[in-house]
Length: 319
Image: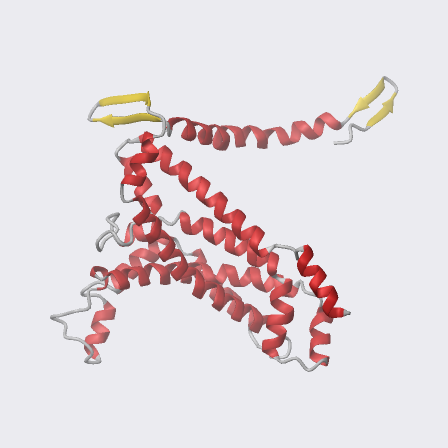
């Protein structure tokens, strides 16, 4: 806002105020729906505040007791579950997305029907997580089509089906598979846009130098799409910490078997359901802090510039 004034017959007229007027609705909405609830959550995390039957207990100031109670509970185990489920879904997601993005943008491969394939790989992203979870629950149930197929080929006996949801490994695998299928298309489209934004002259120079597909991918493509990779990693990390709908529906909110698929947000929801606002607020604050720290670590580690020592060393090698 430069505060530029325009002369008129009645004197100087300032148009800078109209800019503030136009952006005022955003700041009002942000304050009402984001800033005030965030401040309220942090405030009540230091209070004993819950419902016991029809009686409201609190708010009574208890300091850091809510945070101590969290770390004395199964909080760390649920955090471990959350990271395992996120990593198991994210690693194949980013690998497959990078491969598909490199294939679809490589002019030398001359793949036909690119638009059709883009639509197909993006379509799972349009399906609601609840519908996806119900579909997988029906497919992999004890009397579902998957067990029926295995019995047809003689791999199992129908009287002793594979109990996918009674196995820790299978349950986590199915949750990771669903997250992979729902999001790899969106990631592929973003990475394709990043690759298409690279100057064609770089690929032409690499081709003239005799670089093969692997060398072009690692020496030209990856370094130039690093900003988008950072964005994908950060958004995926935040989404992983907020994982809720798929394991909630698939395990009916129990996080079984042995609560091995109970995520942090499912744990948070259980406290909100029991009206324990103090513990829920403390858990929300911890999630916020952990998300911020991890995102900063990812951002600075992937965008780290060469240190003075590294730059000096590279200059010596050039000489």
